[in-house]
Length: 209
Image (cartoon, rainbow, N blue to C red):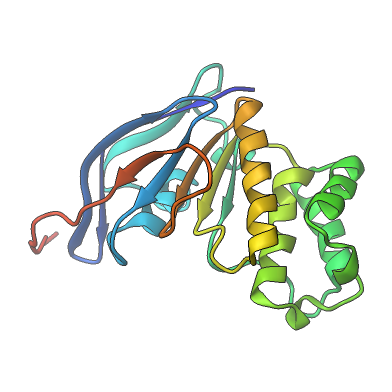
């Protein structure tokens, strides 16, 4: 299902400090918006808000076009953050089995993820033994195993080598071509066309109450 994302006058705080104030933007199906800006400006907080983990201090973010507004965001979006959310003592193959069952994915999707992300050599290794790039590839498998229209990605390329950055870029472009949307935080430019949304810190102020 093709969805659009509408953000209306969104305000977010961290403690007593405004991170984002009165932010509005729209993301259409097939579009990727790249969040840029200095460290600490609120990119991760914004992504976590779009994923439904954080309640905004003002304004609203919603997915529209044929979606019940009361339906869980989790049924519509994948969020991949800095923490890979992998069980450290579990074999990578068993982790894929768990993630597929937990997310309602398919066996065909799991096989496709293993092939497209080059995961076969990792399946008999405990996830705690994997490198940062290998863990990221394992985490990205959920994007393929359980199809969802919205991808919220926090610096998805950062731990990957050149070969696997290209593979993830292909996955992202394929998702967009099928009508999905992506919002991602980046420091380096992505290797395909995106719309940049640069976040700027609001004027310094302390908010009480």
